[in-house]
Length: 322
Image 1 (cartoon, one colour):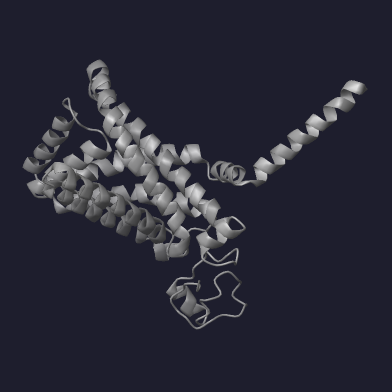
Image 2 (cartoon, rainbow, N blue to C red):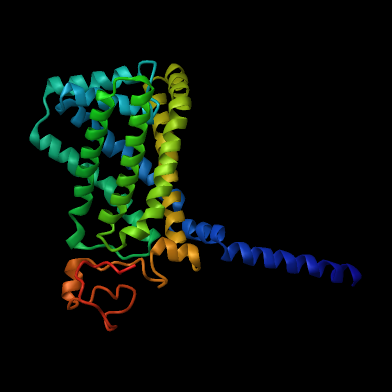
């Protein structure tokens, strides 16, 4: 009996600690990660990026001018770590072979449409993280628009890498442009794929977390991945290189999905941090009603956190005032 009585305080403390962790920020992030099935999501994104995006990059490299192609290879070297060995040479040879064979309009469109399978998978991740229903047929064009926007982003980034002449000033400038471009990309990505149903202000924490995570991963990859690729290529040939790239993609999208979870939970956090992230003290203040839906509701677009029957304002931009 004495031992049982002595054990009760420890059990009580353990229960209190578990309750605190479960209700805290880390606990809520963990629960949201399990809710969206983070393991399945990052594996699916990695597989679809490998099967859908890489052929699109090859087509763009084959159809683009030499300056853009060289810049894309430089981007792969810096962010993926494809430097040294014959891996980069193989990519260049594939692009040259595709260029010599010719890239037809129909083939390019098929590759582009196939790449939308990746953007649709990423769209489902954002919708689950924000607990939003699918956008429907009206938003069916957004995955394709996102793919085109990402291609433009990489072409601009490739040209930036190409015109950099070297030296510390150019290296610093290129790093700043890369970081700023990454922040813009990961702010624009969820806004487009979520059909504009989340305010820009509420997407900043996700964009900042994703941008920092991907930039740090790119710096780490530039140091570690070349050795991994060289080792796998020497041991297993081209198949080993494919496994290494697929593993890198899994890590990349683990960072992307985890940053999405952290940003989403941060916006929903009560207290000053959540108010700052949302830009409003209202718990549902992160919601945004797109213009088309606002017009269908009779212009009640300010009251984005309430039901359609609530009081609304006349601002048709769908953004709740801060």
